[in-house]
Image (cartoon, rainbow, N blue to C red):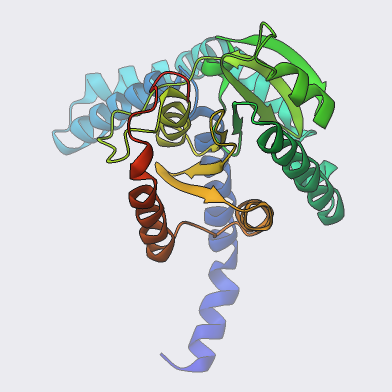
Length: 285
């Protein structure tokens, strides 16, 4: 195809390309909104049934089924609005609170510095702590197991919550849209076979929430004060203060940052070096 023919084709069909792009963005945004909700399976099931019936009616020329599908399309669309009303309201409410509209790069840096300061303070005091920082997948189901706070993050707040004599210290804290949403949450415990038996329920819960969602879990050991980060079902342990700060910024300010094989190897090496403490109580940490 010559350059002139390509130009002519582009002039004739650029609108179709634009429509495909808009539809793709729209469908992808719907997927992002619903994939972390209870209604996701309902939506997927309804879509699968509709596609299957439509293809079957067209291939086998089943006129009655085709007519029923067309007639029910408007009713089904209205029914979906009712079924997914909570999810739609939540999505619209979050639209104005997304980082794209609210936070500049400097504000994101400031928040990550504040989060790091809070975690480092807990580490120095040896307060056991578990954080889950929400990303694209909502943690609403886990938030419902805790106590709602909706508070501004601060070192004083985290130190108070995770003090061993407070009522909310035993559980995880969920941070979403740069605020402390809930505390004392119950996270799923990872079922992985871990070689280091010194890893207790707190670390396993950090791994578990990172396996079930794309959240970033931060764990502070009550016994040693060491800081760990869990993401995508992998754990990086015994981070120094500077390594922890750098890792946070790499995760949240670089969208494509992931654990590398070198990090995984380093983690395994640290776990092996920590094998001397295998007889510790599994429940406390």
